[in-house]
Image 1: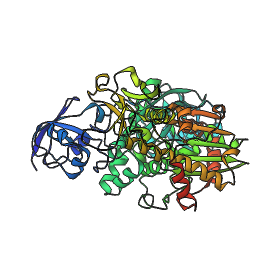
Image 2: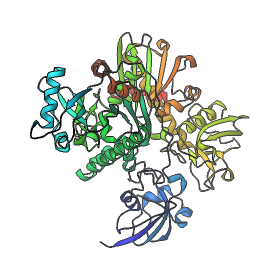
Image 3: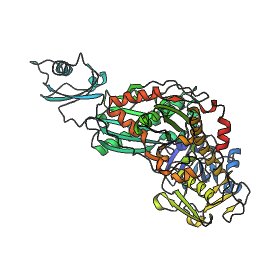
Length: 612
């Protein structure tokens, strides 16, 4: 197969790629779908979302497909605009990635609650006197270590991780060694060199973002914290798209696992550099994620998870050597993954409950961890009941006509006045807007309803001066920002379809809440507190969520926004064996309902589509 030169701008990447593949496939091959400045493909390259728009500035990319004609106007096609997942490279190309199709540096939520805990990590440090091996003292290093651990500290027959033994040279000088022991296994040693504090890594492996925390395992102090976008986004923005990609073949599944591991190693290296240590100093890790992220990381069977009734292959906690997953940590380090509850209610939800202390709530409390897949838990009378609802990727900006993630240039807040005639907006970074992110579109819909531009069924008022129909036909749209004020030289609008997407998302969350209450024999009137977790849950305006009926109508004082509670729970499980066991107890105690099996599901969902 012949190779041709493809030039991606404005990122400045040029490379020889095989002709006959799509532009998106070439971008993925070059790593241009994995990081800032790359190409977004929310539907995983299936021609279902129309978001991977590019402009072929020069060269031949074949004839437009039916999917392209559905998402692109004729004048756009004439200007060279194509969908990267559909356009096939025929020869040398110059491809321009427009700002609205470009991955940026996302505003990631890393912080969560601070919960006091007495450190009791699964790994322990021991100081040992060691003597170099000579003719007079022929005892090898590991014999000395085992002997000292037995004689001085009473450990019964300690073993040495095999890879650690392979990687350690014989002792060249006398001195004190520092060994790390997990149970009865020696997993790390510092001999002849200073030992840094014992460090562990806690990770919240989200569908969109990955948050990491490097922790001093003796003091509990957070040495560094950071986040990255989940690189699997290049292969699908939601969990079902990724599961579908994994089921295309073993090579595709392996690729999903590999990019996740690459991302985790990259994040660990960043955290280690900030803390002044190396990744090989990481001696324990805890990773929490929803059921799909958990399965894809461990390469578990996913066919049964991708279809109803969405059964996990494994729900018990997992301990695995870091090196077996390809993680570049200490030679003998382990990774612990918290148990899955059921369906798509995974270890991250266990961590959220743990991190927000919902398991000890005295009030009737609703806990929501909002994302592409929203998990909800109801804590009442010493019991907990959970469910998962497919709120969809609208809150990440996907399926919105001019939606984007929470990156620089995204409108994040909207306020209307004068019956919707005046629009006030705020963009991330304070720059001319490129699109609108989840909190912005939520605000916009709430404000349109509050000011009467929308009716209760979510229809735009066609007589409003800012509401119009596109020149080429199509659904009505509300002019949010005129072209001269944007950074993309075209109007930013909220379409009737955008409003419908938000209605679907909010209805999923609202119906999940109502059906949980119904299953518990309670009503909204019984609710006393609502805990809102997750990145989107942190940045949304509570008033907007209540206005459109996504959240129950309670006083604002009843709501508590707790940030990345799953990240907090992961840190607790890393630091304390008691907290780890508490998480496992939570997973066993939480009941689960599958929403679609409830007789009232259809009626509740349809009614929840209405604006209150």
